[in-house]
Every structure is written in C-alpha cells, then in structure tokens.
Amino acid sequence: MERLWAPWRLRYVEGSVRHRGCIFCEKPETGDDVEELILLRGDRAYLIMNLFPYNTGHVMAVPFQHAADLAELDRDTTAELFELVTWLTVAQRRVLRCDGFNIGLNLGAVAGAGISDHLHVHIVPRWQGDANFMPILANTMVIPELIPVTYAKLRAELEISAFGRGDDGSLPQAGAIVWLPEEGKVAVRRARDGSIVLPKGHIEPGEAAYRAALREVAEEMGLRGEVIGWGGVLEFVAEGKARRVVYLLVQAQPGPDFARHAGHDTLLLDPSEAVAALTHEDARSLAAEALRRIGIPVMTRP
Image (cartoon, one colour):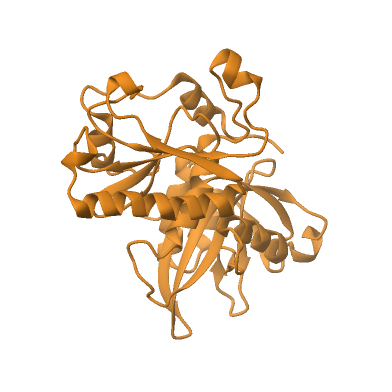
C-alpha cells in the first residue's frame, strides 16, 4: 500500500521548531492540538505525545501551571495530573496491547530532566523483550509506528473515555475518513435512507476504537485500511440517543469483497466531490479539515 507520510516522516526525523520560552506552556496556547500532539486536555493538566519517544506510545502528563516541583502544585492539580496518567494507561493497554509501563518524573536537571523548570510525568509502554541492544548501545529506540498514527489511535480511545465528561449516557462509535491513494479517491457510503455518510459503527466491549473503525471500513465498504492520522469528533442525537463518534483518517485499498459494495453502498469520488456529497454539514467540515491536514486539497462551496 502506497505511503502518504513523507511530510510527517521528515518532520519527526528533523525535530520540531525550537521554542524561545517554555515548550510545555507554549504548546497548549497554539490552539492546534493535532499539530502539537496534545491528546487530551483536563482543567488543570494535559496529555502530550513525546516527539522523541523512548518507545512507541511514549506520552507525558503535564500541568498547565508552570512549576518545577510537585510541592508547587495544589492538591486538585496533582490529583488531576495523576488521574490523567490512569486514564492514559487504560487507553495504552487497549490500543497498544503493552505488557507494562515505566512511569516517572525527573525533577531537576541533575535528575536528567530535559526541561527542568516545568515538571512532567513520563508514561512509557513496555513489552516483553523490548529492551534490545539498540537503546543500550546507541541510545536509540526502533519505533515501528509513526507518531501521528499512534497519536490518532490513542486520541480516539481517550475521546470516548469518561474523563472530564462523566457518564453522559452517550453511545460511543468509531468511524473513518477513507482515502484510496492509488485511485486518488475518497470513499463515502450511501445509507439505507439515501443519505451520503462517512462509515461508522458501534465499538464492541473491550475493542479499541481504531480497530472498530477499520472493521467498519471492511464490513461496510469492502476496503482494507490502515490508520494514517486523526480525523475528529462529532456529537449528535439519532433515534433519541446521544452519540459521540471518533473519526480516524484511514488509507485503504479494495479488498476481496469490494466488488459487492462498489457503486451500491460504497462510492469512490474525487476528494472535493466526496466532501460535497456528504449529507451533513458537520461531516463535510470534519472530512475537509482532516484531508487538508495530510495535504489532500479539498475545494468547498463558498
């Protein structure tokens, strides 16, 4: 399957733009959580991917307050900081199927803190046998998955968790914005009522949200897909029930059952045409923004 990640790959090899001030204060202020790799915001703390991870899924929990030591945080901030750690590890286990974690803080430069004036908690997933010769000899870790992909999978899981929202009774679902690079097309679905929609479906108990999205793409469209990035979240009411749908960007190609779907319930359209065909305005906006994020131009109606 053709890869679309060249611009992203270069960014994560070369590193990010240098910050003049505190990186942990500046990143939340940009307003672009996807660009800054912010996974989840609480009231007092947030989760952010590590741009130079020791292992796949390396995330940091950071207080919004600029503080160098735990003693500077009030009880509510400390409580939320470590509650975020708890929610994250649940998501990491489901998404990454890891066997354990290294969780800790480096307080002060003498303790190895790269940014010593703003404390942060490292959460590093671990697997049996992952401590191979690479990190020991070269201070390097082989990361089998690009950061934007892991970000999308983890964010989808965190977005359907109860953190910060409580049990509002909404039904969590997962869906996809589907790009077929070889055809240069976006796949959309014709629902039973004739509306044109993005594929989505229920998340089974214990199933990771991203796996549910890929399952729906396969079952509803006959396409084989893989996650390439984050799509977004839509909330709405259908059949009298509140629904919250997380969408992932999926790169796909026709599978064995594609002929049964093609031209019937699955439509392959040029990106702008596909976005314009979507029945619901919120879905059009979400799909257009997600596609533009990976460099696929989409023309929208004035």
